[in-house]
Image 1 (cartoon, one colour):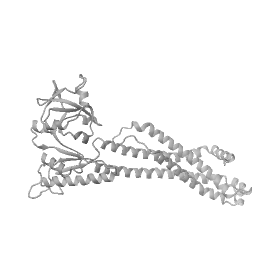
Image 2: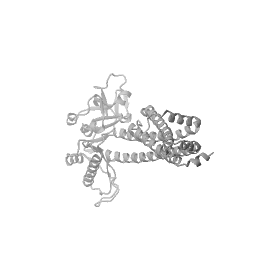
Image 3: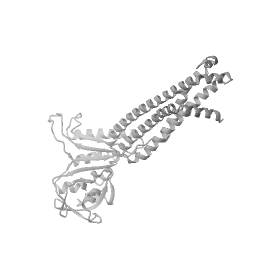
Image 4: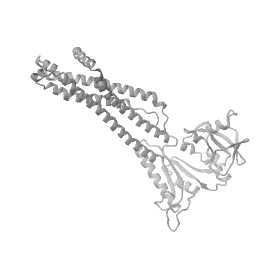
Amino acid sequence: MFDLERWQEIFDTIRKNKLRTFLTGLSVASGIFILVFLLGFGQGMRNGIAKEFEQDASTSVWVWPGVTTKEFKGLNPGRRIQLRNENYDTSVNLFSDVVEYKSPRIFVRGISVNYGKEALIYSVQGVSSQFQQIENANMSEGRFINYQDETNTAKVAIIGNKIKRDVFKEVETPIGEFIDISGIPFKIVGIYGEQEEREEERIYIPITTAQRVFNGADKLNNMSFTMPAVENFEEAVAQSIAFKEDLQTYLQQAHTVAPEDTGAIQVWSAMEEAKRYYGLTGNIKLFFWFVGICTIVAGVVGVSNIMLIVVKERTREIGIRKALGAKPWAVVGMILHESVFVTAISGFTGLIVSMSLLEIIGPHVEIDYVANPSVNFNVAFATVLLLIFAGAVAGFIPAWRAANIHVIDALRDE
């Protein structure tokens, strides 16, 4: 039931103690503000990490050779490992049941690239038709390399959007234009886009063309694979780690490398790396919760102290009320009402300000590994409700103290 006199008492008390009430409310509001803002930043870190891993397929596994660091079976350390087509073909056959997309890759070096009289300083890489899915490249125009290009050792090239902007400004579309790679004309059949501009500075040609035309023989610089996506993150990580370990074991055996010499043949798993980063952000989020809750607790303690002061100031008034027949719970309700009101107003103010700020600045945040900081409204709202409950608890102790003051002692208080 709405009690107008009770509300008038609360507002009279607040008007008489404006600064005290403001500082108390500010401590509570700042606690909620800091907590929500920290949680939003933590979510922004998770968003940023997810965005980084979206640049390539999330289940991708990459392999590249290194140099042996240990003696093994009579072979000295310091050997440089060279991947070959045989390693790729055998890997595909061995793990065909867990591999979705696969591609070898070779970096074509010692070449010159020209468009007309203009020299182009971009990397040329030989890849297979499935590399588009592994790299998550979006075709802006034309098509990517296909199986027919590989079979026919076709002289076709795929360029990035950045190359199109930088080089082909005077033509409507680069599709159908030719670039010379060490004097050999390659027809541009596709233009791709990536999330990062630096990854659009590559020219892709069929892997078979790269090996046969530019004396690559059967050598490979690296191999990449993806696995089918699964709904459960932990299951996807376990699948990726198992594949990584099996693949590394096969390659170590094929190249006579010591099992503990992980630097000789390096295998990188996007899912395993994602789990490591997500684990880190999880710990950071827990730390943010701890800091935010400690700040809120400080605000709640402030509310409790203020209520103690209120009880002390109103001791004589409480004695008169009790002498006139006021029940203990009526006194408790009077103190709790003010405590809950101050806590609720302050908590929702902090919530609204922090959520509004995140909504305004979140989409414009451009920091490495941080993207669109935001917080779940339900979580933030539940936190405020918990804060209000804590405010009620904080006000209950001084309220109960007030309810148990003896009438004679209260009336004697000055």
